[in-house]
Image (cartoon, rainbow, N blue to C red):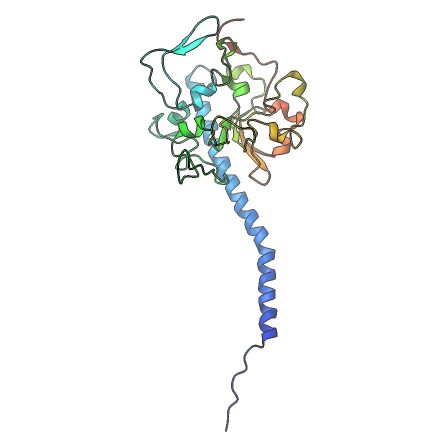
Length: 289
């Protein structure tokens, strides 16, 4: 008795199956992508929480003083800084290059030269795309040492220098350098200390453009900018914007140690000014006023 050959799929049946599979993939991909983005946001928040713990350890060790930007983030800060009462300053002969102090609090060995901050082998936002620049470091999207990240504007996390404290990087006149104690801040849960950064459109002194600072209004820093919603109208003017790579928003750790997520638009809105500054908070200048 002759047996009939097994029947195969027709072309139409195959096309129907392929269409159904393609439709299912198209439906699942956004969910998978969102889950991946959420996972990266959580990993980033963990990095920032570590920075918050490091800062609190520093504050406890140094009589409640909060670290100023150059001391905390600048890996190339130098010893033997000479300052005169008129506001002039220079590096004395025989100075040494010192590591970023935050690295000493982030590394288990306490070594400031352990490149933890803003490096691919240390604390780097997993959603940060990196930036290729063959002129400076051929073949690398991410910095391997902290001083390159900070000095070359090639970082993924920035510091709220304009409130917490700053010296020579942000003001050439030493009479304007300022410092703060944590106890002088009335609402530490409001104040951003470290946060995701975003691409800076204006040209900097390098070809990398991810600053190790964050600021709500810079360069608009007069009294009229306090209630201005910076994004989207002034986005391209911002020199140190907070990030938008996590679902159009950014993580930030606050002075009390908690980590918070908001959209970039909300972080830069006028109603968020109290998250960046307490305008009546006491500060100490390098020289008394």
